[in-house]
Length: 312
Image 1 (tube, rainbow, N blue to C red):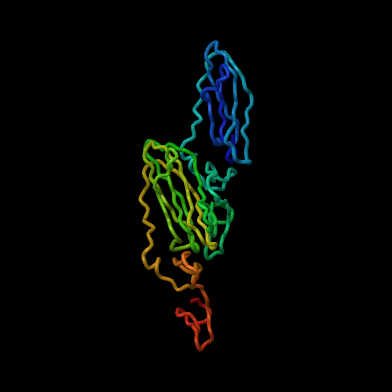
Image 2: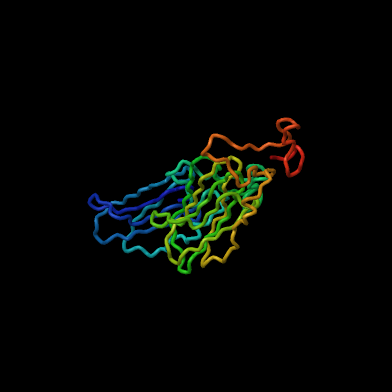
């Protein structure tokens, strides 16, 4: 079982037409692309029928395969457990053969996260490259910055180590009307409040690091949701999700000062800075440069530079 969205294999011993609970189960892909052994002990003298059921597969890059079914006398010898550690289920740099690792695009929304590499939206907006490699050979995930969709990227359910866990990831948000990225740790199907949130574009066009502490032994599923984006010049992007044991070290807060949120000369790559045209009226403000309405009426130029090359 090695491939993208490979689903689950359940094995049953049916008795009198009743399957009962699965005797063995494997969800998602294994650590390596190889054959793994499984064993099931059967009670002495019992009547049974073996049933193999593959379900919930949604990808086309991979298969579930079985081989060499056999029966021998006596109780099975104990096999080492094939339980993946939580970092295997969480970690992803989006560069491997299984592109999204254990993450999937939700089927309950109208948008998706996409895997891409290299520069997007021009070098002044970015991302210029992924965070892992810093060049065009590496990949990251992004979601287009427009429309009313709220693309959900969902992980799988994970149990944190007894010492607790620290989830880290890197994000890139630089562009016009880029919206909000919310990150949740879903428990028992309930999202609750966002564990982390970023609205609007960051001070620089670069990758920023985030960390989220997870309580010891708690069960959770990571969910990334991008929403309220209305521009087409920029994207929300993420890369290098990882889990480590223990509580997160404190990261410096990424709280922009009020000058960054207010100041605007309309000359930068993000044309309107943090300003937007309201959707609750019938008109718009437009960005322009040079002379308007003739030199006798004006403006003849912008105020910032006083020449025709900058914007008003």
